[in-house]
Amino acid sequence: MNEKDINRKIEEAMHSIDDISKASPVPFFFTRLEARMSLEKNAWYQLYSFFARPAMAFACICVIIILNLAVIFKTVNTGDTYSKQGSDIASVDEYSQVTTGLYELDK
Amino acid sequence: MNEQDLIELVKNKDRTAFKTLVDTWQDMVYNTAIGILQNAEDAEDVSQEVFMKVYDSITSFKGESKFSTWLYRITVSKATDHIRKKKRKKRFAFIQSLYGKNDERDIDPPDFYHPGIALENKENGAILFDAIEQLSPNQKTAFVLNKMEQLSYKEISEVMNLSEAAVDALLQRAKDKLRKLLRNYYLLK
Image 1 (tube, rainbow over the protein chains, first blue to last red):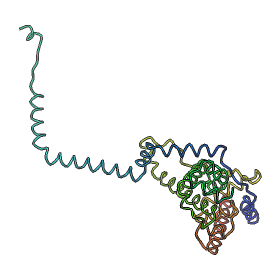
Image 2 (image 1 turned 120 degrees about the vertical axis):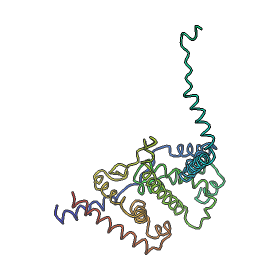
Image 3 (image 1 turned 30 degrees about the vertical axis):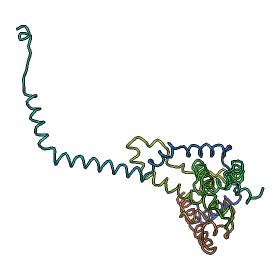
Image 4 (image 1 turned 180 degrees about the horizontal axis):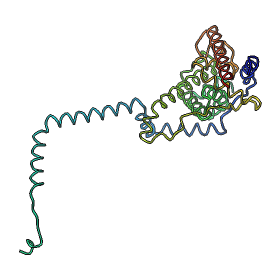
């Protein structure tokens, strides 16, 4: 394509919307608008929209992470003796070999 | 019923008056939205948001500017917000895909065919709209209002809160950039 052709193409493209007619929405626009307005007035929908906002969702995730970190931190600091006791008990249970064989049941 | 009476009735939440207002202005709002967004579904969505905003905040319309100017301002602002939200959504598409929530198609078709373009200009129109998509938001708004809504420089300046000279400069830069983008397109073809 030479320079002349390119310039002609550019002008054709630039003028392609000169006689453009207006676009219209598909029929029954007002009906759909009314339906959406009544949906968005619904209290549950408003509540959902409030929590679905990115900032709100991000804040909720932050709160959950902070709560989790707080619980982990608290457990690490205060749960040493408890976990030691727990593990002792567990080991006693684990190693107590109570076997009930057929011969023992007959006795 | 004149425009002022209609607005007063809508301020009193009259359903019939609101329907008349929507029927009167829906084409203008939709046409502006589709020019900026280049997607029929998004344009419908934004048009609904515009009229919801009109219904909720028409009491704040004091009649200092023309009603159509006020409506254009809301449309441009809602369409620009919609583009911003869509870009943000695309940025988080990866995270959404991790939760299996990425069923929605976020990528627009490569060629947008405006329903108002004559059949013989369809292909050239699609190429031009592809270039329009690459303009800055202000350049795009000014170009759409001028070419698709046939607004004068004065009207555009009122909608965009700019001086007429600034609109003139904006449109000149938009046309220069479009020619440059089209040149690159035809050179690569």
